Image 1 (cartoon, rainbow, N blue to C red):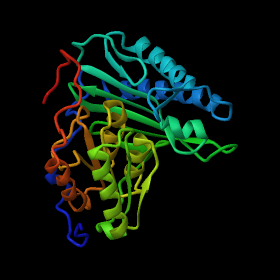
Image 2 (cartoon, one colour):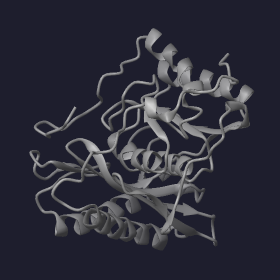
Image 3 (cartoon, rainbow, N blue to C red):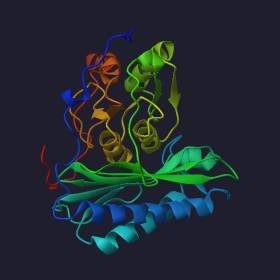
Image 4 (cartoon, helix red, strand yellow):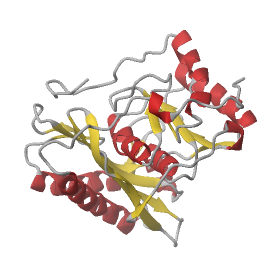
Length: 310
């Protein structure tokens, strides 16, 4: 069992994931386009949220709806109108644009499609833009409430510029003990060794914390850590569009982002652990079991020719 009473090391021991600069494009300009694109996608979802869903399957339990595709199309329209030469990676549309661009947009037009299909919160539009492989700016528009009372909140961040929710600055919680923490995790569609290991972690931390939640939207989960609602979130087998926006939000809100094994994180990795920083070391060590089982921790995907600083 994890030892919950040990105080974690300061957050400064962990390397930063944010880009040191937003490059030749000012942060305010990037944020303006990201927020406009995310709003356009969110408007599509809000229009559809109380209507019947047209559901398709990418896998046995992996859903996609017409709303996912329409949301991505309007997001792409906004982004490409402003930045025609940028590289874009969308969950539904794949990779488009100039592979040599220093900017890579990671777009999830509807993160939490299963929740959306059932009218169950939470789900979100998630957009993060990388500069030379590191998060530079991001926005998550999360749908809150439920049938007949849907609303949204917008959480945004820029490298070195802090994180904000609906225009108000946010910060991670100050809770310093796992036993006083509310934690969140997620489970992928493949029920393999990584899934089994995470089930064991779920049991372990349910025993010693105030609870472990599984909400089904990585972007929302990470935003909640940035908002100080929860203390930590971890998951294995995410994709860049799942993590690019939320990782920057957590760090700019004062938190910490690493791989599940505590190693340096990039959005091309196969796992993520985010926290308020002070409980980070109390959650990371048990994930060493993943390495012992031979789970692959190499990069999941990085576009060919895309320039990075790592």
